[in-house]
Length: 275
Image 1 (cartoon, rainbow, N blue to C red):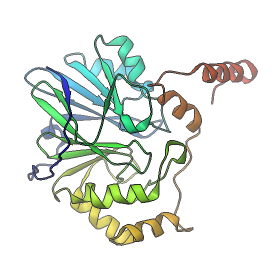
Image 2: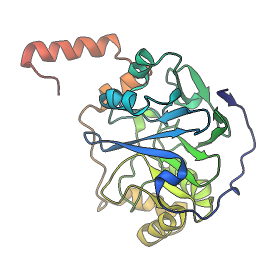
Image 3: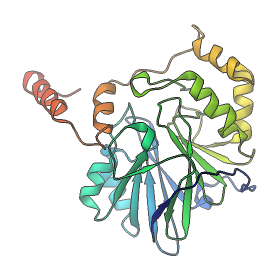
Image 4: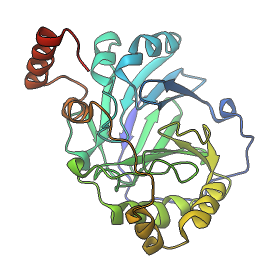
């Protein structure tokens, strides 16, 4: 039975040493080349119930095929994305009974809302939601039930590359610092980090490695990280070309608002393209 269970107490201690092969974690990492985004499919082998984290609309056909032998219960967004449109709405049209999930703090539309410490259950498995605001005000990370890995969305990047703040979605550098240094980096060293994007620094890492990378890059305190983010010489993250459209759609669960459709049709009629 799939459920979302409210939990107000969260513990980080259920983590053990593991092999780096992602298949050993009971999940599959999927990729969208256009946005360089990762999606994560997690399933219960016994019941074949599954969840898909951060689906991309351009990859819905692939995701439906990948889930052919699974019962997809939830399409979960870690936050309101700025670089791609969520595949949640389109997936719900193709998969009967599928529900979309996002944090209550995001202010976005969804079928179900989660808060810090909530558990999302599917079959005999679950993931635990960790509120990690900063990139946006509603960012969530998800710890696997066995504690072996954490899916961090855009909160924690690999190699110190790709950190940015989406002010249109309530992002805050100080909140990001708190989420990184006081939450995620307090997970045990062996916990595998599964990021939201491929920034050319690998597909996954560990908390220990990410902590060491940040220490070498900008120091060990929140103040050091703020200085790093404000440094003029730091290469800023590129602004996605469809940022405003993606945000507008993702606030509506991946559905194109009427004014966005009008803008798209106007551009098509005038130039024959939609960039």
